Image 1 (cartoon, one colour):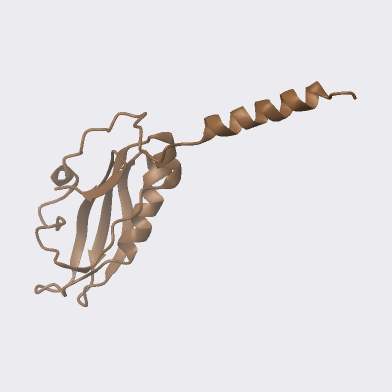
Image 2 (image 1 turned 180 degrees about the vertical axis):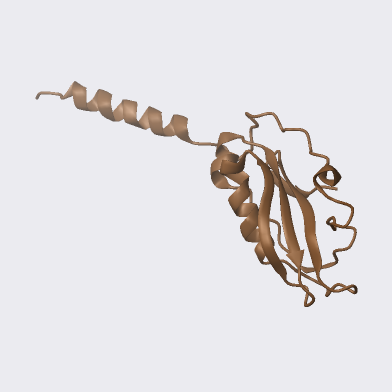
Length: 142
């Protein structure tokens, strides 16, 4: 009876590799969270800032991107948007994102679906909202 030890070693190595690649599902930061920007520093006196003039009816924060979560990435996004007279978002743009390749797209997509109480003064232009991606959670900045 002849044993194929090469095959056994290969199968064992493959098994060890698969076990080593498994994660425990916890967030392990590998990047330093960049300091929050001063959002008012990006705006003009006539611009609206999130939380001051916006009253949300329906908004869901974006999901932490899986790729960023798995690699331990953290960051933030400043989103600029307009709110029309009916309370719908328009002209959603990323003003600044760190790092953009992870968080910009999901943030823009989520904000496009937000709705607000119709503004009492008519449409609001150039509103800014800070979205934080920190330690595996997503939150709004102030």
